[in-house]
Amino acid sequence: MLRGKNILIGISGGIAAYKTPYLVRLFKLAGADVKVILTDSASQFVSPLTLATLSENPVPSSFIKEDDQGAISWNNHVSLALWADFMVVAPATANTLSKMAHGQSDNLLLVTYLSAKCPVFIAPAMDLDMYKHKSTKESLDRLAAFGHAIIPAEEGLLASGLSGAGRMAEPEHIVAFIVNHLKGLQPLSGKRVIVTAGPTYEPIDPVRFIGNHSSGLMGYELAEYASKLGAEVVLISGPTSLVVADETIKKIGVGTAVEMNKAVLAYFEASDIFIGAAAVADYRPTHVYDQKIKKESLANPNIELIKNPDIIAGLGKIRRHQFLLGFALETQDVLNNGTKKLQSKNLDAIVLNSLEDSGAGFGHKTNKVQFLSKKNGLKSFPLKSKKAVAIDIWNEILKEL
Image (cartoon, rainbow, N blue to C red):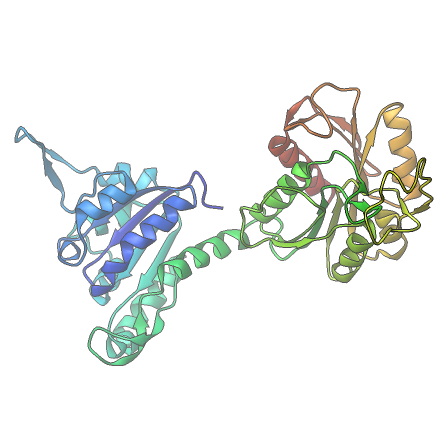
């Protein structure tokens, strides 16, 4: 949610300013570009050099600046405000809150705030009696009425030695608040999504298995982008070396088709969208050997197979409100086979790809797909990275919804 965003942090003169280097660090780790503005008094609590080093940008605190040759110029507050995708004022002291609420502009932070057209997040910080005071409440109510998001102060030990509400929210809580707020504005906010990904491994003995070449990358990209769209995501993954970068995604690791089916059924009823991107093995051995099969013991072993559950076809029989999207990797007659699966499995749509297309399917970071739906027909896409393909697929799903 924060990757590539321009975040402007305004720091006013409260003791909680000592926490802001960590806040800058968290935003940077999330992939954001960060700039910081200080009030004059804030620089007494936190080092501008520390903030400049962590943000990798200069940290202005006054209207004018002087270079090494003594030339004087001004810090362009309008450019700073227009640069920002959103502004975070943390800590916001009672003094700064009052000035923001009433349009005062006697420092660089305030004039930049008054020029900002982006969303503004405010993290108040002060002693408990100041936080409870009617004037502070009026300032916060006024700022909330402006459309700004107020990050509630937390309870705990305060600089005065007292304990109560008034502590600035911890940096990780500020980041989580902003991410959740942004997710709430996204098209999948409030939706629950299940994505299956990767292969299944059907054991023959403790060493060998029946499997396939799926890396799971397509499913992981679909899950990651669903989370960016605001969804609550459950990723049910077969064996793969991939990791989930988004900590809000609930990942459930499974090994076999039976295990994957069980995990899917546990979450399906409460879900809104199901995407079956996993390459589930169609068959499994009837008998699994307890010990490794020795070459000497079975000259030509015969492995009897039984059918695995068809996960998405089973969901098609019990679905109620859920949107179902399947995948079909074919080697020939792609459209005809895909159309049959769309109908027989009671799907809303199916993503088709072919091993005949160079750079598509298993073992590649790219894919070339067709999106076939009952509602909107067929749409074809050129070869793209699987990350870009995930975006295309979700754009089509949003049209369907």
